[in-house]
Length: 344
Image 1 (cartoon, helix red, strand yellow):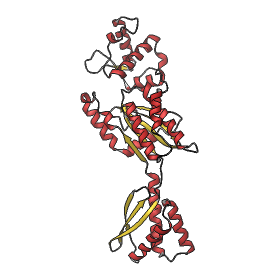
Image 2 (cartoon, rainbow, N blue to C red):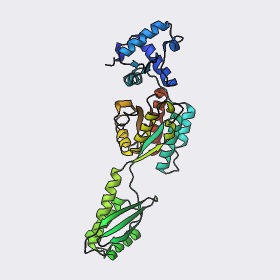
Image 3 (tube, one colour):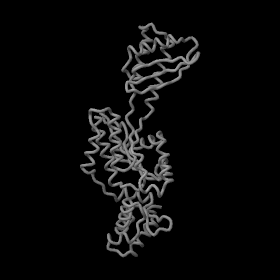
Image 4 (tube, rainbow, N blue to C red):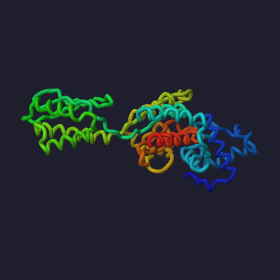
């Protein structure tokens, strides 16, 4: 069982801090000789303290190496109780803010900020964008067979979605075409939910000579599309190549697993959603999160807010547990703050 920070003597805390910082910097086991010049203790005394730290569950030694590395519990203790962080440097802050300008679409700004965060942190950058319904540009129907038609919805943003509709036997292709013509003439520019409400108003007030069965079918389809988009988060991932660095060759299996895990976007979103609560960064180290337990990766994420102060998304990074947490945590937090200012 891992010891709480209060159970460690000053000497143990100092040796533990030096081991973790050296490991995070070098990515290799840390031996007593490496620390001898940093503290007024002999190598033998340092080895004794490191052994005590190992018995407390904070350090371990891989294979037959004489050096130690922090356990996941040790990293958690370091991050929560010992690590000292500061604001990102002025150059890093300027690089992040330069990517977030008012005269660009929201998703472009989010993607650019995520790419910059990825480059600065040498991790994969991830962001959950605010949910936004597409606005209608055009709707058309293509008959497939008796009782079936393909609905093709084109958004103002250029997105295209296709769905197969099952048609009642009494519905004609002409009736569907009339509803599509009405939408394209009168409802272009509306969101899916707005278009659905307008269509239902037409049904109630009977102001248009539209086939009621066809109109109701299309209105229900728009409602389903709208609900799907509301449930479907937009995830942007940048910089996966950063995860394959000079040290990757020594642990190809871990890197392979991590790249596979990054393909499961729904699970990534679910993990990031856990960072919505709270004011600052959430840090998930190794097996603390189920998704990245196999690859032994860490996730640092922070929420950003919209114009009314509500959380609208989450931004963060994914990388090995051997992260420079003291540098990356403030960087993620600053990016979230910059995005909050952009969204307001």
